[in-house]
Length: 375
Image (cartoon, rainbow, N blue to C red; front, side, top):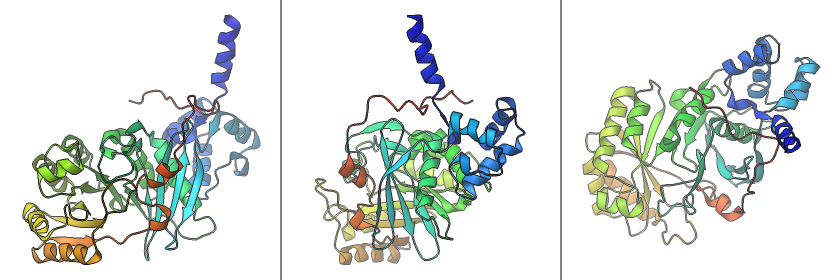
């Protein structure tokens, strides 16, 4: 009995800790207290990872070899791997990322003339169940740790290897509902904003949510300048509840959005996915304009990405243009999103659905996936 216990303890002790589960400050403290090295060594490692894109300790040649060897033995920079990568003709890149427990999420890199935008996921699957979205087909498997979100950024950056381009914007519009993983998300966003890490300004970050008023108000009170996008998709409660089963009413959502604007002075975006014959009529455009009249906001119209088996399809370009024009004539600021990466299933959840496979019951033995609670 005691031999088995000792063997299990040895197995656990050999597992590596994901380095990015630590903040730089936490790593500096460990560098001194556990590794017996000056804190500046932690900053050197951080520079290799975030400034130079080097993810293997053995290549960090200004770090002493004994320390590199110990770091490699006890830590891993990436606890996840890219298991599938696709590049569209418009150069939109999509990756399927697999974590230590076998769960998978999608991340996307969107190229535009003056910006390079990363889109990351916050959960494996989604608990919301929007009827036109592939992400929630199988419900929620689990929420992501903060470092698993940061790792998606590093994986996306690897697509740019050899290029002078850098990721300039982040949208949290991948799989999952960000407001239901808010603590981990905010920790990840602080890494994204940190000048020593990705150095993406707060105003270049957008968090998209189906709308949870309490969490939106909590986010508003954090004194950050992140942009908020709310997935509205309908001008009435009755119609919205058919699309989003968890919807609890538009009025409290709009009130929370107003509070977010008042706290941050950041214009709120309302996302509206156009579904043929369901929410794309001129009558519904006028209802939407009436609902948002006087609100400092932008409406982002999104012709639906076709999801096999959903029963929904996008309207014609003419119908989409008419809907947008009616909003403009009513004084609502509006954009009509162009489709990106259609041939690589760039819409949320589609690539994972295509590649879905059973996850192993146990995580690999070299990476911890349980962490001490942070205060």
